[in-house]
Image 1: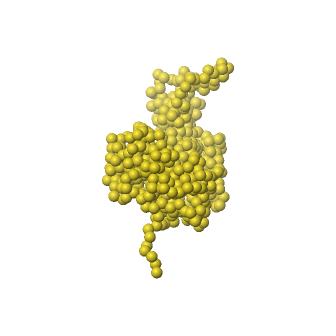
Image 2: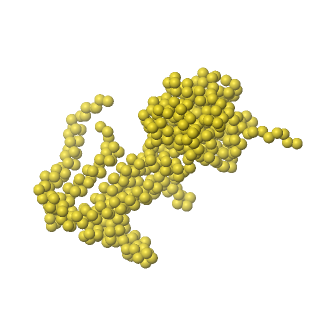
Image 3: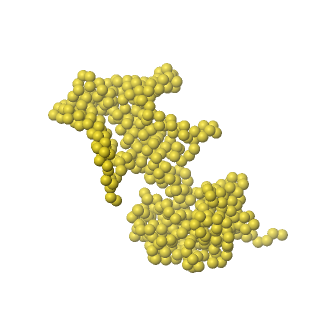
Length: 266
Length: 228
């Protein structure tokens, strides 16, 4: 198919947008301390932040997978009832909320819900001796809260696109609901699940506001790479640049498996 | 005094289904019945309700009124709301769009049904000349080959009622011949006899060559029923 010839004014504005997006990255790369990168990234504090970040983001991704897959399926395939009231649209709005909510508001909300004196948190502490704020588990909860919508939206969209004709076909062949899910729905959904998980993981890895509000900034426990980067900006800008490069590299890596879904083929 | 026990038809339908602009209606006094082993061609213009009739029998849509029985068992009662799900109806459905499972090989597609035995799968792969394609994905098959896979998959599920929606439209001569050969066979899937079959078609030769009976649908109603 022949591509259209775009008007020059449109092309000019498009290039301005590209420059706007590329400029910060160029600035980062231009100021990066390439020669001392190995030393900076080998620093104990950086390695600690990397360890916490990987632990928190991967645990969050696992929780997202377990909670998000059934949620996406329910939203795509069924009506959701509260009593007799259909509430699917309400639930979907709730799912999307963390995507648009300022993360610090999310963190504050988590604090009031799951904090030591929070709505549920007080009972968690009393019954299970479980404290979430300012712990690694709390950081995982914060990361899950902000990352879950990215996965659910991706997988639900894929389920809508797929339709349910193949599932119906499987049913006519004698497959029960569990077999249909296991042998048809999930295998067909795997690429979207992978893409959604990569996005959710990247979001969890980059999480800042909800984490610092709910889980704090404790070295070795809740100080993730973004928090360490922010901390380093005040005392050691070169270290902040090195940490930023790590996060940039990870973000680019995430784009590789998800490019088919989010980037047009041409 | 009671007479000799009679075998119920493989399919008995009367009732009404409203779906969008279409009302499919079969009166109780003139139900649609298909005997065991009988092949009934369903003909009529586009939009007459032919594909909807197949979806109704498969259990993909439900009756608003009336009753559908398969082998004498009520599977859909529009009045009481009784409904047997597709998985336990023992139907084999071949829709126009085939709906092959793209993540499975040809052999795994044919053997998808929990009722499909390895022997029947192997026999169908041979009879429809699919043995050489067994390890391919459906996306690597031609249209004719994919259609043969869809027919084989439906037959491997040991259906009591086979539902075919234009199975040989736009097929190459070889695929058409093989599918027709199987449908004309009194024992298409090895030892279980021929299932009752509803064959939706626009092809007069197919009706004349294969069907025991033809019903004509027009605007959701049966307007003719008899020998082709």
